[in-house]
Length: 291
Ligand SMILES: [Fe+2]
Image (cartoon, rainbow, N blue to C red; front, side, top):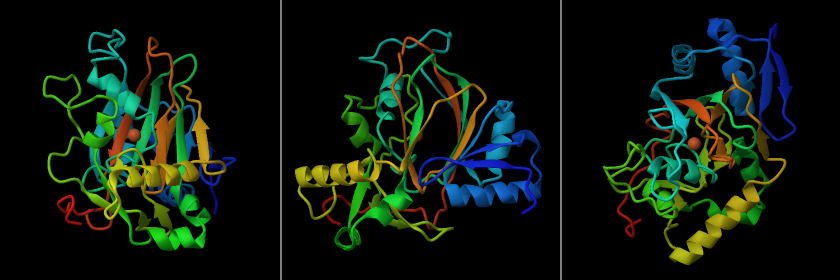
């Protein structure tokens, strides 16, 4: 392939750093190459980009329809001050929740396809993002475990995951409520086939609970043990953000989490969320207890 891209695979089972491209001026031919690399590596990081919000949305749209075009992920109030009420501020509780492994929108009927994520303001230390490769995590399971989980599933809910941080969504909150799905939660198979690569993938993360056929404690312990196994080297990578970095990840293949930072310092990131496929990324919502 006659490429202008300078691609450096990460020291992990996935991911690559890509230099030599300005994401504002990518033609169709180059985009097709980027898309294929994205499917292969699941995570591409483009340093030193100069995209405005509208450029980011335009770039994200090339990966598919958007679940939402762009949102700030930040600990800053509208007046520019840093959010400080860690006990009561629901925006901070969402940020803290996202410091545990998760896939975006697994709590909605249609899992998100991926995200374009850019760094606008970064703290002096911490605040990195980590990703974990659920393709190679599945591959690394022993054959008995693969067999045992082949017909298992788990419910996914933001109510469940956020309740662990004492966050029970209320309409008076600064958090706009995105993700608090008010119908029966989706039930996702633990093993998912990627619709474009056909690779098998472990579906886990902080929103997952209540494996049908298991008692509550048994399910918690089982999911925690699988997650612990899955999110180990060489299946993890942690990125230390520089302003201007842009990451594009395949949310179907990877889990991710933010790393802690001193929250008296601002951190402002922008996410564009790519919508999943309404057929292959859809999970039904059977009544709990009836599955
Ligand atoms: Fe996330």
